[in-house]
Length: 314
Ligand code: NAP
Image (tube, rainbow, N blue to C red; front, side):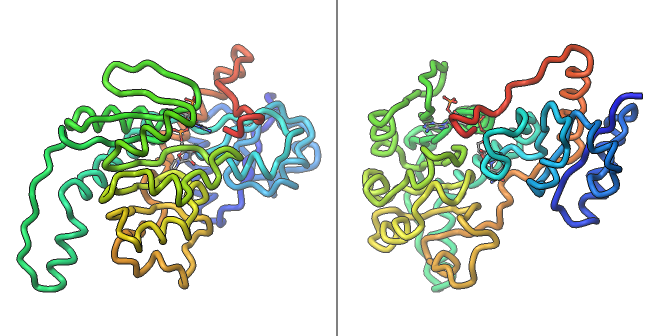
């Protein structure tokens, strides 16, 4: 009999049960066991753990693990909590997740391009105040991050007629997107984008990346969308730049502490749209298919998809 798969989460029981059902349906030949139901022997035998916000002590108790599959795309917390000696981590790379994020980036870019925050404000004041139409081809959208999510967002934006430029750690060549890297590339992207969309992973290099100095390099009246992680932007600096009126609007889906603190000035700031981390939720059925495919390939060939590079942090 093949060793069981450990399912290790800190989800509430109801959510964990739903995930278990979906995972078991996607892998009918596997025996998937929630960590708390596993015997000592089963914990020793498990070679793979499927995890969602796991307790690191539970993962450490699985002494025979060869690798770990995360159900989420962002793994900064997992990498930090499991430490450098943990087995290789595979994160979720799911075309459906990229599609959902691409849709969100396009929707909220349109929200800014069509001046919806300004129209909402003028309606509240009973003011009839038409604004000049801005054609997408006259607007430059700067993507911070050109990974699984950034690439799909770039595709959707170029298809919609926006001018798109993207920034990544390693240089890239793409047909329809101006690509930039390094500090100079970041400067250039910030200073020439009408809308910046952040889709970077949170790492030691990206934490606190968007400081007041960098935000002030963006053109007067530009806007920002953060769909990645809150801590990439220095929150107080963003408030300062919005208060000065240098940036027009920020759409924020992610925050350093979630749920966002009641006392946060973001809630009531007229230049901020707060979203409760909803830009790209994982779709369980497609995520389970991806996880099942990766596990089947490993059982058959011993090959893993690309794993998280701990030195880079993503
Ligand atoms: P990914 O495929 O790993 O791509 C990351 C991109 O960021 C790559 O292009 C990478 O450059 C670039 N990058 C990383 N560090 C950099 C640095 N120091 N300087 C410049 N560029 C850097 O990640 P993904 O799947 O697109 O996901 C991105 C993030 O989105 C996740 O980490 C997660 O935090 C967030 N997310 C949010 C939601 C939500 O609902 N809000 C949902 C899913 C994911 P290279 O191409 O050179 O490697």
